[in-house]
Length: 296
Image 1 (tube, rainbow, N blue to C red):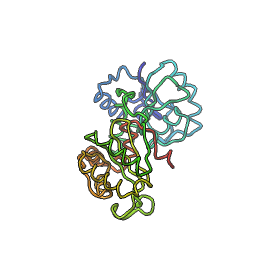
Image 2 (tube, helix red, strand yellow; image 1 turned 180 degrees about the horizontal axis):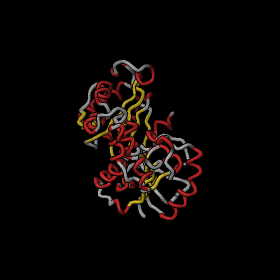
Image 3 (cartoon, rainbow, N blue to C red; image 1 turned 90 degrees about the horizontal axis):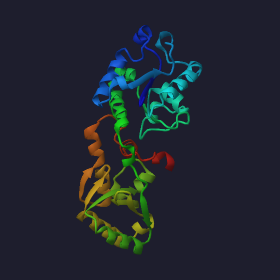
Image 4 (spheres, rainbow, N blue to C red; image 1 turned 60 degrees about the horizontal axis):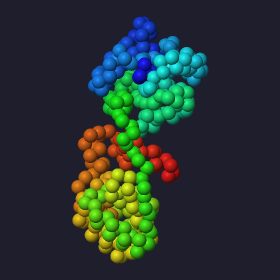
């Protein structure tokens, strides 16, 4: 069986029928599967615990542990290529960690030491989506990852750091060959305070992507040069620029011909809080590693 979905434990309807996902959660899951062209009859469904806990509470760690040999044997017998874990309980037992679903679901499919040949896709349980509609877009998005070509996403960039006037001017000259650039700026406001205007602070570094996985980073020492500053401003006025939150970057750069703002584009697709930052979208949409946590 190619795809297996794992829930938490039987709900009321499932407890009566003995069939996983046969109640309201199952009907919502059916709609999501249909949206992505996945035949429900071809999908395996099960739960981390087969017994319905009293008062529909979350299974205890002891109960999950007791049912783990059964779940593991069940999955090994199906040998799925994809395992979709619905909610914290299923996700944490399969991935063998304590990471919550809000963080665990972001990005490309995960790997489990228990099932090394399967792609693990964590997402919210349909029951959580029925209680809070804000979770539903995550469920819809994540189930769609089953059909995505994960090999066509993020590539580790080849980057050049220039931090002196001569090297910086040479790099700017070479960037003249490209019509479109992606720019990100860090200024002293990022280091010193949370409030203020970007144009009033010193440039710390500027990253310029000129092709997929091709980046040049201008360092703080190079950016102290008035010649470098003037050459960069001239470059940015004449090229088509993409940036995240361009209002801030445009002010910090002293201008620039911005034609596409990734943050604004993100908001037009999804206005919910927490879905529009650069670190979230880089990981979720492009498959980049969680770079913010690595830096910290």
